Amino acid sequence: MEYELKALAPAPPVDPKPEPDERPLLKIDPQTPQTQIPVTNQSIEELEKKYAAFVRQDVYGSMGRGKLRLSEKLLLGLGMVVLLPMRVIAGTLLLVIYYVICRVCTAFLTPYREEEQEDYAHMGGCRRAVIVQSGRLLSRALLFVFGFYWIRGTSRSNEVDGQFNNETAPRDQSAELERPGAIISNHVSYLDILYHMYYCFPSFVAKRSVAKLPLIGLISKCLGCIYVQRESKSSNFKGVSGVVNERIQVAHQNKCAPKMMLFPEGTTTNGEYLLPFKTGAFLAKTPVLPVLLRYPYKRFSPAWDSISGKRHLILLLCQFVNYIEVTKLPIYYPSEQEKEHPKLYAENVRQLMAHEGNLILSDIGLAEKRVYHAALNGLLSQR
Image (cartoon, rainbow, N blue to C red; front, side):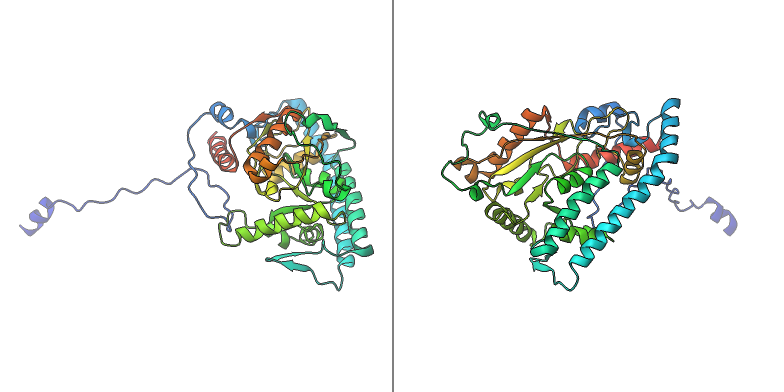
């Protein structure tokens, strides 16, 4: 009887075994707050239309993982056998040489410290001259190793800003007061940094982790980089902004001080678009020098838009010839209204750069780029 009652008793509900989540995992930066990025089932065509500023148009396709024709595979294989080893060795040698120069020039010196920043850009004399001149020379040599044998540069006349900036440089001011405190550039690739190092060896804004990288860390301190925690919204944000403004004003007034090089878009694009500008470069109310960079290509695009850094570097080094075009616009002098409204100042400079560079204005930014990368990575992994 007891056995029959047990048989008739309903069995306790058993939770079904959860199905394993087969969605691809994204690489998470341990220092970055983890937020949920939705990976949708949108087609690649829909994603490319929505996030056009980050879409790759070269023969390697989305994320550099597209299908290649036989001829492209042969060229890539030849580049990996012939070019890649030589360029890796030459590039590493140049990097080590410059690191040794920086190490020798900063020996027995205490770095300048301010607001949790640390750099050697404030030192003067022969040591500073050696760091700057050798840095410019070796930056150009590294671009040559990467296949940029020629750099095509043009400069626009002062008449170009007539319809965008109705306030020209004051004629009665000295040359020191007319000097720009910051260089403003569109951001296409990490190669932008190498070009600007060769052009004028400015200071950059970099992630705090850069200061701890082998070799690169010391070089960034010699450049006078300002380090920020990109995702941080802590109380030191205003301190970093204050350091940037102070550096810009000092560079505006002192010709011996390094200029600040800023990418107000905040991230890279495919080179055909211009994203909204952040106002950090325009809070100091000083003139700025707009510079436009473009990387023409036939097979591989040097733009670092939607491709991993390792894959991008390998494909770049396997490219036989790479091209870069630089357009330097006239110094932009803000009006009184622009000085009082940094957003207006930033937008007017952006409109000017888009007009002169034939760039398409876009209203998306870094957040949308991350969504695009996550969705694209998910779709390609499911293929």
